[in-house]
Structure formats: C-alpha cells, structure tokens
Image 1: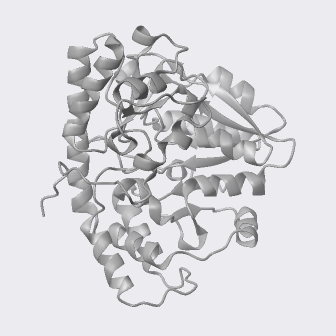
Image 2: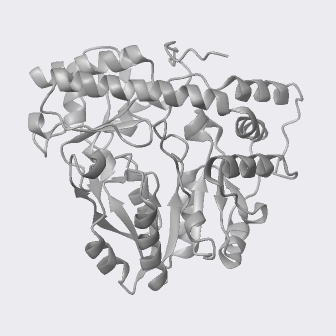
Length: 403
C-alpha cells in the first residue's frame, strides 16, 4: 500500500500540542508574545517532535479492533504478545533482542528517565549528559533536585563525514570521574543534532562510566529513524555482559504514537528493576498496547516509505537553504526527523531566533531556549511533515531574515 505523506492533516480542535499548545510550551518562559501575523490555528507548526502524518493503518486497525471489545478496565502486559513482537523487531533491525524478563513499561521515555533518576541517583549525586541536549533531561533532573552536569560536544561543522559534532573525551572523562557522578544520560541517536555515535565512541563512553561506577541510561527513542542505509546499534549490544546499561525505547517516535503513552525500558540489573517494580505502576492503556504490538509486528512497510520520504524532505531543505540562506550552516543528519540549523550568521548567537521567526512569519520552531546549553544560534525544525510544509517553512525563514 502506498502511503500519502503529502496529505496535509487538520490538527485543529483535537488538543494537539503542536498546533494548540505552543504558546505555553514554546514561549511560556520567554516573556509576553506580541500578536502573531496569523491566527494561532493558522501557524506553521514545526516545533514539537511528533509527526504531521497519519499513524500507520496497522495501528489504527488494531486500535479499532480493540475498541470493538468495549472493556477498558485495568490492563497490564499479561501475555507474551508485546514483548515477543518487540524482541522480533529488535532482532531483525539490530541483531539484538532484550530478554523479556528485563523489560518494563512506562508512560513514555521522558517519564522513564524521571523515574530512573529518582530511583537511582541519591540526593547530592549528579547526572551527566552531552550538550546540546534535549531540554527534558535538565527538567527531569531539576524535578528531583539532582544536578545535571554538561559535557559540551565540539561543533566541528562540517566535521568528519559531515556529522557536525564530536565528543570531547578529555572533558567527558574528567566529569564522569567526579565521585558524586552517578548517572550518564546518553541520547542515541543524538537529539537535536541527529548524530549516530560510532561503536568506538559508544564503547569508550560506556567503559569510562563503568570505571567510575556510573550507570548509563541510553535514550534510544529515535533508533529507527535513520537515513536510508544507516543502521542503529543499541549500546547494550556492544557490552552484553554489563548490567549497568538501561535502555529506553518506544514505538512513539517511529510510528507517531506519542499520545498513546507507552514506552519500554530494558533494565538488566535485578536491583534496579526491583526498585522500578516497587515504584512504578505496571498498568498500561489497552488501546496503546494493541497499537504498539501491531506496529512492531506489521509496521515495516510503512516505516520503509516514511524513511524514504524523510530523506527527500532533508534533501529539499538542504537545497533550499543553500539557495536562499547560504550563510545558514546545515548538513543532513544521520538520524531523526529533526533538522538542526545554525542561523547565527544571520541573527547572532544570543538572539531569540524562534520568537522572531514566529512573530514575523507564523512559523513555529524550537530555538536555543528549548535545549540545555551549547545551542546558541541554532533552531530545530521538525521535517516529519508534508513536503509542501518544508517548502513553505524555508520561504518563511528567508522572510524572517529579511525582516
């Protein structure tokens, strides 16, 4: 079946964060916003990391079939269907499958990270991550009064293989050796840059952590959203004998199911898993359970078409920026559907670019304020949208620069 990713879906009136929740989420901490050049429901939303595409038919079919059985009481993962489907998916895509007894469920990867910080990192201990970092990492630490320590990635644009960033291992090694350091939050692939870490980089980071009794929590939520021809290697696959790696995954990004609230967390350490079981409910949404199981079983064809479409969107953005904003710094990322674009040559590193773009053109994107450090001058655009939206966005960006 051919998927129509060009269709522009109406997200108005359904409580969509992307379309209706931007004022508080995107600009709520950035002072009052002047009137936009369009109505709120006419903005071009490319900020939050969900897709503007319809979910796969296999997911909606599974949800509809589950709804036809109108019993929605307390539900758990009480049979093998979900974990068998996940294991088969992981084995096929990564040559690695987690042990089903190590898998627990969560309402989302962000929630899982919050819970893991609370359960593992004691008051006074610290958490390490690489920056620029997804802002929710810092919020998760702040929520529990834990200090987030940041190791800045080196911006090597265009860098080896046009990856853009490299790990400063001297800085990383010094910070992970802090006696109060307890956890390393790894974003793999990296959000926002889209870097796919090499096996050597992954192994080196993990071994430095192990040498300092630091637990690694690997956020691998974007693991199936690589460019065509690029593969993902779970960190746990490289170090199968360690029980100090906790892997967070979900179908939510890959298949646009974030609103269903279901993620899976692989915790091989018995002590950590017991803490999780003691603190976190094992109940799941029955409709989410049906949809997630279905996409891991039968979602491959849809994903193949999605990745091809996303690759073309990135190629379009790269071409249009080169033509219309040649001082913008951008290379197509190895993974994710997020474009990380440096506009500091036009706006300067300190300016609130996303606010200016919104107020002058109605284009909603994320700026440095949504990330933890090392992001000045950058904006992040979500390219999981119809191609006409990408075209429109570049025109609006050019208009914002002009104004």
